[in-house]
Image (cartoon, rainbow, N blue to C red; front, side, top):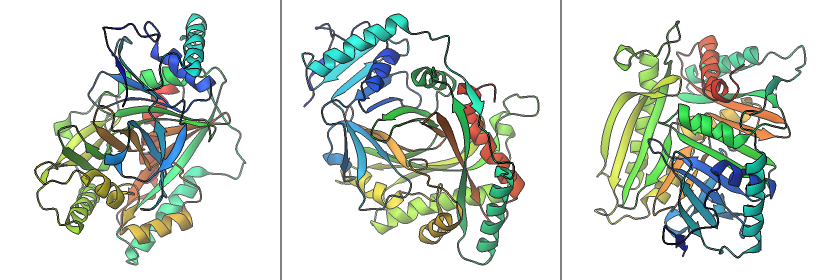
Length: 415
């Protein structure tokens, strides 16, 4: 069990800024995760010092407190990456330390190194210089828009040939970034701009990469009271008009293509419930919700696992749902094969899932959407679009551009 420092004892982390501790952890090569749940004002920082990153089966109810990140292509029996919660710090929105969970002790040599470096970083950190982004040189014959629109045409053709009903195509957008880029400052900006999203920053030193994201889509959640939640999220419209103003929610109109796309995702969840003979669930929606600079259609599902005596429901549904039809397609097997054949790159952790497990007795795993990978001086932004037989290639390209802008306009406003 974790020992929890409270106000009755002054922690050695007292007075330090969350961004300085995170940066110290990164420089020391400790796997770490920084996150803020939707509609909350608490920021949590998890640091894995002793165990590092390990692989585990997705049996959520059996895990110790930690942070999970998993790839898009993983299958039911594949192991997830798990960051053990050796240290879990909770900060208020104003950067005041609230609680410390430290299972390795304040006298541990690595903890002392972490504190010393964080103090040193805090005395030198220049938050006014968040780093810069710049365009990378591309071969003259490379046209990402034309290539993506061609894959949309191939997908529409396959759908009309009855190979599958829907597929979610994705693409990347790459920028260079300067050495003085501050990931924790970018996290802070995203948290301020997108209070409704799951904001996360994950350092994976074994992969030599960091992932920053603002996801609107919960995959599976289960709170300390036993309430299980998931959602279907699909259909996309820009949230701003030509003048750059937010369009009121009641003015949004959804066309048949978007309504059907969202309905497919909802039916997929219901089918998963049917596979395990679960009928006692509450379905709410669909309703229009704001996610960054976009509007989506969303339907929420809830289950009382205590009433059903089904504590392992989150683990069971995680295996059934991933990858969801919102990031893969319908049917799953055929659409996934199409993506493997035509998408042309490895999605890695994009459209996989990530989030805290058993932290404070709660698990909240989100689909890794609206995300960017930082690796070897290259920032890779990811975005996807749901393709049906009514899709128009140019509009699908525009949708992916809007989704990339969710992060770009906050952390790289010049692009």
